[in-house]
Image: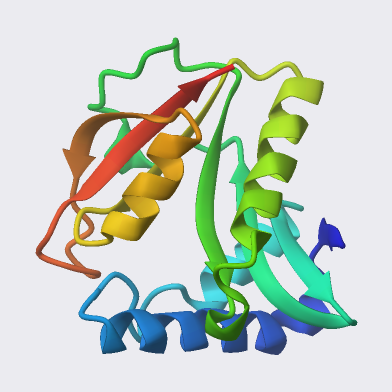
Length: 166
């Protein structure tokens, strides 16, 4: 089941993303760290009703942010569509022991259906340049890689920006 997150679930949500961060680091992908994703970011996501969780057997196993807010780092990107009626995907995560079972696909299906139902013209996101699995995931779904941005607090390596025109 995919639903909006509740503030009372913040610790469970952080547990999921911390397990994902540890798993990525074990695999040489230094995308997330002790600073990101943060409790403060998730609290803001919940406050704006943008954070969704995926539950399996009454346990949170995944997260996804569907936002209409464009981060400043995205402004220089030459997007495929005008900067209105776009959504931005952030903090997609699936517990490591639940990965490879189609749950990330379900979360992205939810985001794409949400965008279409609400009249958005595109979906934008970024993914870490060192995370080849994520890049294949988005490219297989039809997302087009456009340009790179940097989040210096996360990594010296760039993040690739992607867009899917609906």
